[in-house]
Amino acid sequence: MSVSAALLLVAQLATATVPVGTDTILAANSRVQPTPLAVARRDQVVFDASRFDSLTASALRALFEDAAAMGLPVRPLINRALEGSARRIPSDRIVRVVREHAIALQEAKRALGDRSTEDELEAGAIAVRAGLNDDALETVRASRAKSPVVVPLVVLTDLVRRGVPVGNARDAVATLARNPRSDDVLLGLQVTVAKNAQRGPGMALDALNRYIRSVGASPAPAAPATSDRKPVRPPES
Image (cartoon, rainbow, N blue to C red; front, side):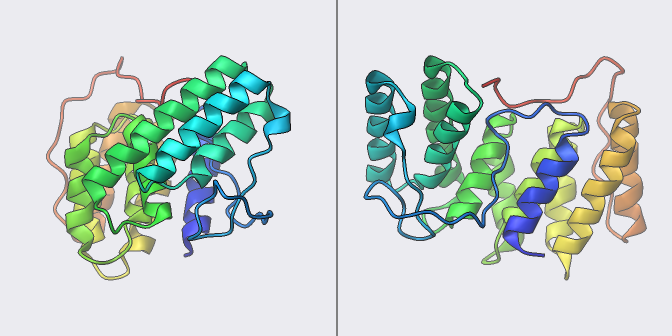
């Protein structure tokens, strides 16, 4: 399964229980013209300043330039700004979300390493904004050695959003990520938990442990689940 397909799958599954906001993953195949502010590693994306008032456009440009200077991908930041404009979100909230996502990208880069791809950093940033810390991201990176970690991070984020305790989700994903054909196995875990999460966090955790056992791995250590535990969500846009 391709990176873009994995990203789109988690976005589609998340809509069952998580409201769509500025962390919606945009289609990775859209093509646009280049701009000096865009990251050269992928198809570039235009920042259309005409969609913002002059003060907002200036603030956003400063954030993009700072991100580029730190070696962070600018595409995800521009996409969030443009999506915010399309959704008619107030300008101050757009700037705040873009700033928060830039910080999350920086945290993801620190945890995942300087050689991480744009897709890996974006998946890591979304994970950070969903409440995952450096330890979780570092554990996922260590489980994959030199292989891409986009799918493990996408699945980990979705599990946490659906109410699985961070420690259980991290250990389960790290365990499965070491196995051959682990992307398919991880996506199977994601679907299984999604189907059971509507019945409560406890059922989501039970489904996770049953799935781990069914594929011949050790289940994640049990964590107490209470009926009032709510799924972790990224900051509101």
